[in-house]
Length: 391
Image (tube, rainbow, N blue to C red; front, side, top):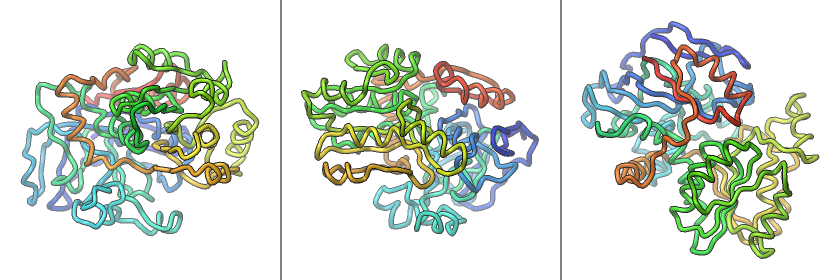
């Protein structure tokens, strides 16, 4: 089959690789019909996340048709259309039973790597390093899905791929980010990052009843899209006005009740700390660029919540923990507990309350994936969300 493989920083190639096979009775093989490039895939493309190996198949946002099932699979049959969550969970461990699916104890076959770096391992992920299990991803023609009796969500035929593909990651991720804010009527929620996760965090914050939602970025096209999709949204372009002062103005001097960092480890900025982040990351003196997270902590009101769906990979430099302590902030973060949210959000789509396809900016063939990665990495303003078709 054809698959997009990682060979090093800024080096991804479509290669012929072996077709996946059933290895466990709880496996399924899925023929990919749609797959997408996620902003967190760029962390791999740019070499920020360790433990990738040459030839690894990328991709964790995908859906398709079941073409083979293991002997223990009774919930799926050949021909079913499914969306597959990017997190892999067993369904039986301490964490899965508490709906902390992304903390699954059993799905990562290589836990010692994450345990060395982080103390414990989270669940395995598709197409996202050997630290997170080394599982082949879905930017391919076919993929093996472990624990297929737990993860894949069946999709009715009347819904198009574009409507449901993002149930695989970014829609639930934005939704959980907003849920973690514990939003109350009258709240102001500030969101850093107008990429796809930020766009869904905006939608979700309004769904949870926020009175005022403020989206912060410097990409004009992304901010304009968000305004066109959300009638009452306020936007801040951080190249044109000072974020802290504007947020104080919007909240009567109090600050936002909750702040969402939907950017993660490659945040942009023009302030001295952001410039220092660029320099340190470029010279391998730092692992992450946490400018957006620092700003969210600084701007959040006393007693507020900072929610972090943006991916971080290592150790944060000049992290303003004193401000967080002094203001009594609550932090909520982590990989998304996908299995908890996918059925609920499918219901929202079926009811016509949201069409997630609004974030798509480009549709290309799988064979064009290397070009898509290059352009997405260089032109984030216009290259917002890329969907790839293997066929």
